Image (tube, rainbow, N blue to C red; front, side, top):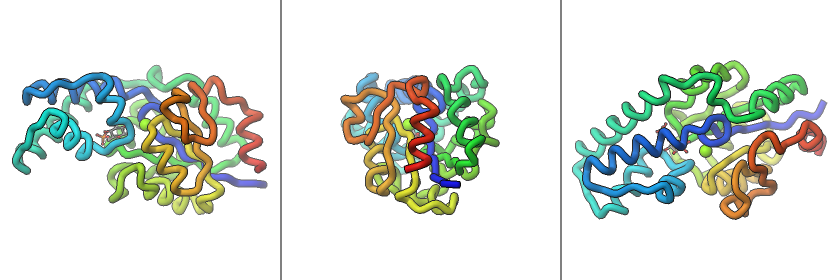
Length: 218
Ligand code: BG6
Ligand code: MG
């Protein structure tokens, strides 16, 4: 049977945690006198925690000592985790379990490829951890998206060649990473943001089992 590697991003693909990242970053930015908008939040999708804080400080023309910087990183994460702790299965995005279960029935290897260091906690909270054959997250990679490292590591862990992998991503940086890894890139979100993806769907309710079957075959 044909086997492909199916790699899923987490935030914005499996669960809508962008709203919690936004609340936590906004509170933090405002606490040091920096403004933070939804548009800016959009630009932090797929971007690591450290890189995100660097960008926020740059936008606000602020520079901090190393100590202050790491203190702010921990504060942001504490606040973010206070939202994550209240998450349950109801926060899984529509039809995600349906697609995961279909892939499992079809005996296709499944990986998580996320920038988040909280990926395991979140998957446990929403009860999806057992669906994945490997988890590659922000704890396991040195170079963040758009660098392809996270997806190449996922492919390696699955034992599937990169050009036989398919990536589901909601972030521009993630689509760039999938393309750089020579994988099929599937954007989840808006076409005008994800123009470099091979395919774009608004969400998983638009993805049919026939489409997945074709991906497995070709
Ligand atoms: C990505 C999110 O998945 O993970 C980013 O899109 C976030 O917004 C990044 O900054 C890192 O997440 P965490 O949970 O390690 O702070
Ligand atoms: Mg994402």
